Length: 257
Image (cartoon, rainbow, N blue to C red; front, top):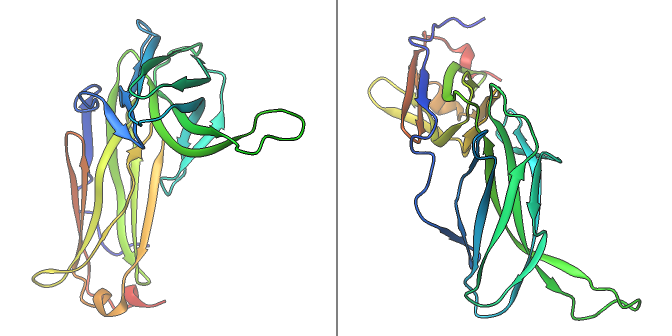
């Protein structure tokens, strides 16, 4: 049982659409793409992903789409889906050429956001064709873009459920409480001593998806742990800061283990 009380429970809400879109095309691996975030709505259930070849040679690409969830460590979980239809699946681009991948959904829009990923893989023909005359391909590079099916009324909401230091281990529990995802720019826990920071840990997580939770942990060196007097959490999102602080009681047991 925890001996200290979380001084204030962090809760963050924002309307969908604020700071969720990046203006203009982005570029990765010589391929520019626009938009960066794909939003489908009941009123506009289809759109076009624009792709442009920035290489000085002909490039070939393959497109695939998966449903997207995440585990409690924030790792992507992809699974096959038939909710998103798209065309083409394989195509070729001349240097500087642009084309669109048309995509839409057959899924029903509900009270909560649904999430998917579209993958665009660079492929190249094998120099050594198989004996049966078929064509072989090898994956070279990949871009992965999010697809969001927006609910009619959407808000992104997150809460800090707990932060703790026990057995020389930091633990942080974040929870989604809204109907849309929260975009995370940074997640940091600082261990404070009597007058200054004695240890800091950042967690490389980018999203907190609808209905999900993140359980993050990290070891703290025992010499730093013994100096701990408080914990401070800062979660920077696309449109604001979620912050909390836990005052630690005097104890030697938190650094055992």
